[in-house]
Image (cartoon, rainbow, N blue to C red):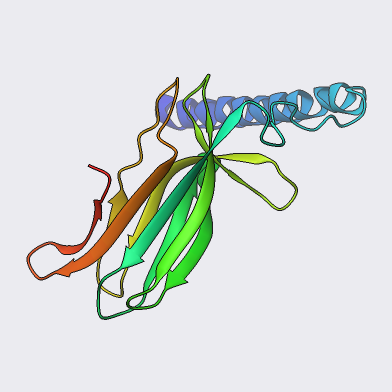
Length: 164
């Protein structure tokens, strides 16, 4: 009866391996505690740029030429978004972004003046949305961008640049 002995030996070896893995995981987890405790005081991310020094204002206006309200939002770096405003039919939203000449980034300032890089500006009606085409390039930038949003049956919502 070699088979039952082999099964018993296999079960014993499996139990030892499992115990060893558990012990290894515990030792590995506890060995990082002294490093975390001894890492010093918390230092916030220092790459945040505050204020408008070295940045040029860029006025962005969006006119709602549809028959329904539209909402505009900015998609910001690191998966954040910010509500820019709701535009009534026939109304207009105007906001200022800040263009960094060195990096080409367009930034929205938060309430304490931190620059928040804008990845995209979206406007949406109840059934469709569209992205505004804002150029992001290093060097000089246009001082203003004007868009008119229209409801199109075949294309949904469309916001066209009026500046060319």
